[in-house]
Length: 296
Image 1 (spheres, one colour):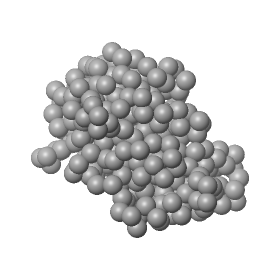
Image 2: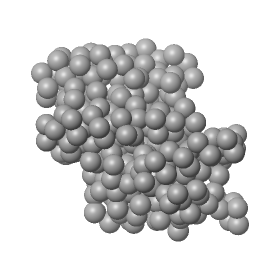
Image 3: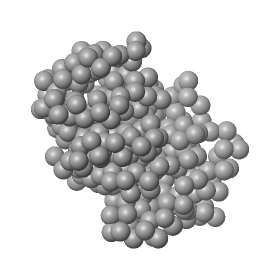
């Protein structure tokens, strides 16, 4: 499938009343992303606290997201499991509920070698016809895959067709572009590198930022694609401190605090994650005010 642009990541709202996922609030978050003109929605990523959900909750979020989006944009489901068997189960479920793609990151306890990683992705590919985005995020998953190896998987695994690179090393994106002769789509997963990545030829930007700052990421993407360097640079530097802040503060905690500050949604991340401190909330409020995303 052809996928490009801004891939928006919803947070997962929880309800103290039902001690679980608040699907009604999830719908509000999805509407916020759609209003922000995202080109796809990727449920169950880091911002969605996927690692902290039960199997039932994970399936709830996946199914509700696909149903609620209702074909308005493609839906990508994140799959990050310790075992191949669990990953296959999640991938099959994503296919059964009508997801358009899966984004697979090899979550690891033991350090996996390339043969183990290849068989992991190949086994998932053999279990479902869904397109696979290979996701490299060593800071979270404990596995670091080289551009050359990921391209080997794209070449050798039938459904592996694109890459999300989140190491923060722009040289890796250059290598993906160069080694693939520009034929393999790659996506930026590092918020504060958005301008560099898009300029380097990234097909899109995976981000939860639109939950708080609307279509400003989309404006940046469009400016780069239109070749308006000055506008793109101005838009990026306008967002830069905010993008860096939500990453260093923790995506789930930062976005949930931001939505509360904006009066759109209340709720905290799931423990052991903690909400932002009062000081950090003040900093975020000031940033959102400067970005014209909250009334002064």
